[in-house]
Image (cartoon, rainbow over the protein chains, first blue to last red):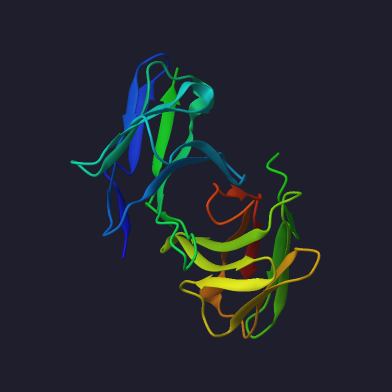
Length: 115
Length: 112
């Protein structure tokens, strides 16, 4: 079984400040990792994904994440946030086994960017 | 716009009733997934279909069922509804099970 823990339920920051949203996972098999963003009253939008290869992954809207296998982490970072980045962010893991490719989500981190 | 279309956007009904949620995947996507998002349980995987066949099952209640039709659209049927079934139900699709999933905007189900 796999699980995801997002270490912060709420992260308030000021505009133009850097931010890190933390995510740890556990799995008994190789995993694929994702970050999704959910704006109010909208669906989930894929920010970035780690499938294989370089452990530093760049996504949309200036976000990036680093896969750390030894620490089983996949933290999301942005060097300078904007008001428009205010949203809920979800970390997810998939094992993409032959039995299916369900996503297991963390509980979400509400990022609030203040002026 | 993800290309995944879910209807209706909102649904209000009473306990004991039955509803059907519909999902049209992105053009070319063969795999469809259903998720439930609620305040107490977060985002939970319900079920996956690939090219018309059930591929994986998650925490889906026996009162719930789904299917994927030959044109690849999918329906999630919820019956004998209870207050606790109130939630946001998402459909996602992918080209195949080894590609990232793209989500629709969800159907918000409210049970009165």
